[in-house]
Length: 456
Image (cartoon, rainbow, N blue to C red; front, side):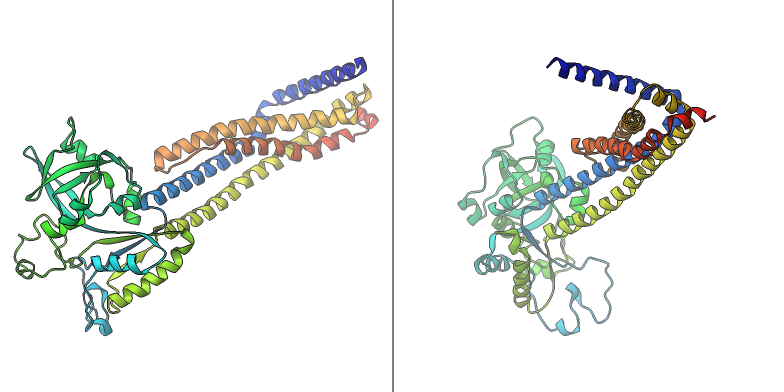
């Protein structure tokens, strides 16, 4: 037992001595050591920054999937915008010559009801109609979006009621004048009071506030690219309320035929929109059924609209997954490019250490002549290489973290630095020092003491 302790103490002292020699050698050539570590520094920094960008992109994709809802398919009408110039062989709503004599009623509640009744893989169906409206509270007027929905809308988009309650059956069926407001609307109209039970005037109709949805952040890119509503800025009312008390675009009235009249569409930006509803969101029961359900919906809608493609079907989750795949490939390429810096840094360490061996042949010879073993010499030069690479790795980690924060602040790109990326970078930097330092260390250990002492 005493012999074992003696052996451990002896090996510890030997390694401490070798470590001191290695540190002295590195500090004796500070400038050269710093230049040697630059490749490691920039390589590690690049890897951490790239992984942070990749993690940020993945987080954004996951957040966007939550925003659009899980397993959702969106059907929306194609609407000809004002000022669009159509060629002679095209009519409105994208009809070609062969479709000119066909009639499509546009997107209607009947479409939503048929989808729910016929397609077995459909879990929920949420029709929605949206109008731009003016709102008045205590004489203060502003604008907002008024959306007619069913309770399924809140389930599909993971919206929770923070205050108040959901629409009941009577309010839904009879089109009662009630509404649920977003947090932005609440802050604007009821900054210091409880909005539940209060009234706001939407155009010419007074609506009773029965609920407030929980705040949900929607990024500008998600709103523009995926058509996600900015939920906090909306006023939600029962679908029948908007169709009965505001406007049902599927009904032909004298006002709608009179192009010069603005009374019917006052405050509304949909004069050229003849679809009864603006969107149908379908939630599929399982993600593996999304593709098949989309194909069924395509055929079903084609029949219901007499072959006129005046609608478009989007699968946000598939679009997001494709975007994620593209970003993953991009991040892999950037990571591979960044890793080249580590390899270059390792080659730099090997070259400098080889040069150091040639410069210190007499030193090596003296150590070998005084009783140092080949293992001691290998350990010494490996330790020097590892010190340089670890120092570069630590500096690279700090630089990488700083780069990630700068990218977020300057470019507005979300970056997430994971502890795993730091651990990997530290491990890689140590491995580079050992791998690329071994050859010079072995070359130093193989020197003949007699020849080394004669070297000038």
